[in-house]
Image: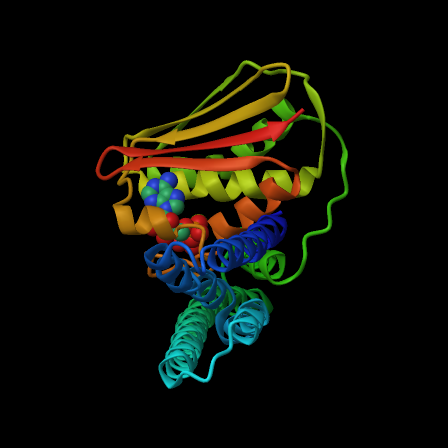
Length: 336
Ligand code: ADP
Ligand code: MG
């Protein structure tokens, strides 16, 4: 969709360039003899399409626009050719000067673009390295637990039941991390099936309950939509909800409460997750959907990016409002 928008914008600019060059040529040709000062102004107006072509399409755009404008401009010189040196010098200088300006502008636009791409790539690679370190760090703890408790079972030490509980929980933690990375790395395949959205929210709530209780945070649920069936990929939407609720829990302090609400109208279903936790400053709010962006020492920075990928994969949208020290509200909108 964004690609379509960009293409449409480029087409519009192209039309503006062609139409303005034709119009300027018309004014330029038609004012030649009678209104001299206007004629000079119209000559200078050729800079407009030239600069526009360079700004919008870079160096190649500048060359092509220059050729196009020259094709329109040269017949004028031929028609009005005199052996007057001043006329020839004036026209030659004008052609040279406008060409140089257009090509220079195009060159700088291309250079700026390359630089921007390189900075974005560098930032992405730095994030990738940081994320790899975070992932390895996150996986290390459950691996240590699993091997430690497995050894205790083999040596017949301690309680087998509690040891296997720790092993299962650690494996579950590892599964979450691996899923996050995989979900982010590959295109998400949607398997849509009519789903009771209320039941799905309850399932996500159930999944996060233990983490909330462990932190002393209350999860309260208010579902105005019960038994509303919508075509969803259950596991993905559950995953997005779990990511968002987990973030709310992680931002909250002991004693805080988190509200999970849902409502619907005839077109959409709305799910709101509101916490009264740490909130976000402006910079964080602007970056939360950037993959690998995290402010947590233990975070992968993929939770929000994945949640958005999933919600947009369902043609829905996700919107976040947050105030530092006051809390955050994440609103999901999914079409019915
Ligand atoms: P992670 O949780 O691994 O850091 P996310 O993509 O889930 O990655 O979140 C990115 C960042 O957005 C978090 O590190 C945090 O700073 C911020 N964030 C997300 N949700 C909330 C929230 N509910 N309250 C405060 N900050 C949040
Ligand atoms: Mg998260």
